[in-house]
Length: 181
Image 1 (tube, rainbow, N blue to C red):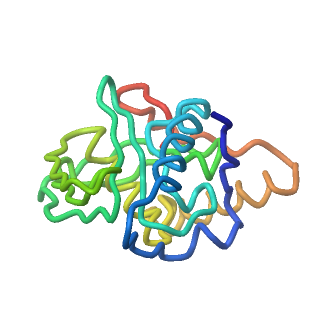
Image 2: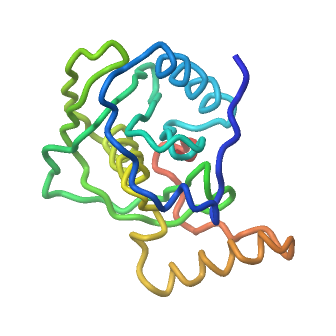
């Protein structure tokens, strides 16, 4: 399957709230297959439909040996415990900044066949789910940064768009050495 074009910072689709999927069709299942291929080719561990220009509430993910799709996902529980770890994004290439996220979440939605899903996620999988649901709401990981780091990230994105310099990499390395979302 062909890879889809991943939208990058500045594309207005990344700031819009995606709409609910009312009826899952073969077109959706084809999109999901293409999104999985695109995520793996990037490489990444998650990809939301708005990142490929589709404003529907769908994301795919792959962490270690587990993978899946979530349609109309809702995070119904977040742990009180949080952790700060480096986070990146396929739509913000080259950026890596420390973000605070819940260490555990419960995600509910449906799969590509319309069957209900409920996943208790911890660690990296929990972070991926939070990151991708944010994308479906038009939120980027840099929106969670303290103001000073957010300004730095936006400056790096501006410079990158102008071809001036590569964006800086935060000093916090991913705990698992994993790929961006």
